[in-house]
Image 1 (tube, rainbow, N blue to C red):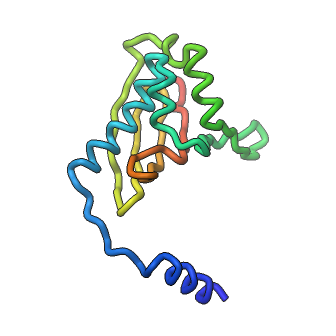
Image 2: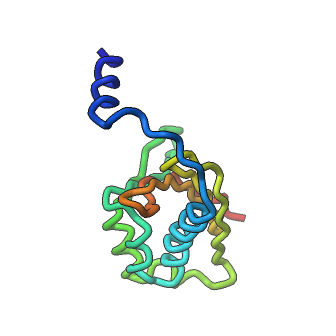
Length: 146
């Protein structure tokens, strides 16, 4: 059944497209998207943040309670943009703001990007969506306090 479904999708889409090489333009666009996200946060620039996000973005963090049970804390694209409009990271001292972007992997229309923001790490899943790179998922983790 699964093979039949895959075969139907492949036929409907006109076969499997040839692999697309990552270009310097892709690398620059992936990095620019990540910087729009983190610098938009630090500067309170909601338009910049919104430009970086897919409308169905899910930002999640695993939180473990004192009994050892884990749960997911979720944030949507709208909630993230609203948080930026409310000031976002502008309350963080400049000396504590980091925007270190590392592209970990790119394959065709998907990229994994790490942002070291200082007190937390974000792992972004970016996708080429209608010709531009946008963030569709973020998994993040707080650094332990010193």
